[in-house]
Length: 491
Image 1 (cartoon, helix red, strand yellow):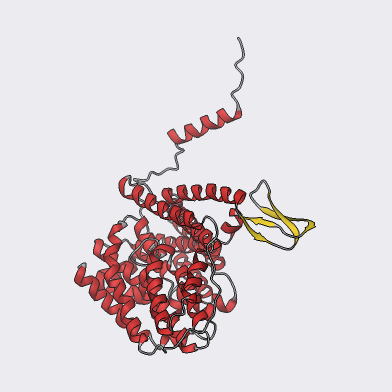
Image 2 (cartoon, rainbow, N blue to C red):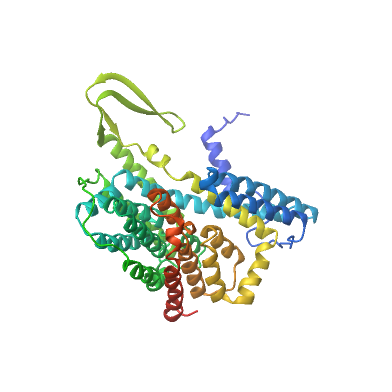
């Protein structure tokens, strides 16, 4: 018998992948099978898991004091909690449920991770192309009065947050406030408070404005265009305290002189590509019912192709002295080679270096938070909390309360906990919790990433105490925004 030659390795690999896709391996469960969760809150496993999470959260809250990145303790806590979950269910004769729930949690995180990685890369590339520097430079060069700068920075923050996320918008406008009014500490303090409130309010009426809004959108609870219903209450949330604070804003001429800076080559095209990527993500989610992350990753691929073009045709930096050339190894890394002694050198656009500036600590923090909350939910903690909040108080009061809680506890775990509880709410209820969790962090300077970042940027000028002095005005805006939502959108 003639021997048939073995197929090439590529053909064998393709055949194996096809077999896996057509007949996936059995893990003992299907997507339709619902796991029966146990109430393990009163067991030693439950108590230890809750204690571990509390310790990790203390490290998160004290990140600026202990100088330990928040992702590190929460990742360790996530691992310990899920080991406890596995032991707890195994002790009750169930060796399937813990693995099933963990895989679901990892899948939830994977979609969020890829979406955020794509969005953050776009923002970082636009920053590298001096999009935000040019905008800041233009504002400073206009020689507006301090009071005009106060309203301009607040308005632009509110409008930029739904697109460029609230943290980036706050940092950008905070730099303008500090450059223009650096010799008037009171103006800087009040301007930063205004920016923090505007950033958080502007982030709630778009899935791209805040992580909490993004999570609600990805769960399919609110469609992209339905977030626009939050525009009127979000506007009130910002305008009410902004008007009250403006009564104390000093007037006067600008205090900075600044040379005009321009965007680098390709910046406009990258902005257009970002808009097209967002539109693609919304379209495939609404029309094809595919996860929006597919559109974001496709846009990221196009961005990387365009970055390759820029790396070949865009000299961006000339230095005196030595020629520095970048090389990429097989693992995608890069290193710098110095050779010769020439009068000038060209450093070209490097996509890998831009991506390295993405907030990896933030992405890893999300991993830890998602797994910690899901682990506690698998132990039964969120069922009891949901019954207490949404069963006893009702959705309106419960959503208002979790928004206030988010001022002291990070809004991301708060929103993820609410999503994990799956309280019985209609569209207006989910819009309300998006509004409250997104804006409740404005009540305290430490209640949102924007506030914490501006405290670090402004130093002793904008502090926790200076923000706290205006918490009453921010609370008034918070209450009136909820009332506006109930009046316009109902419950």
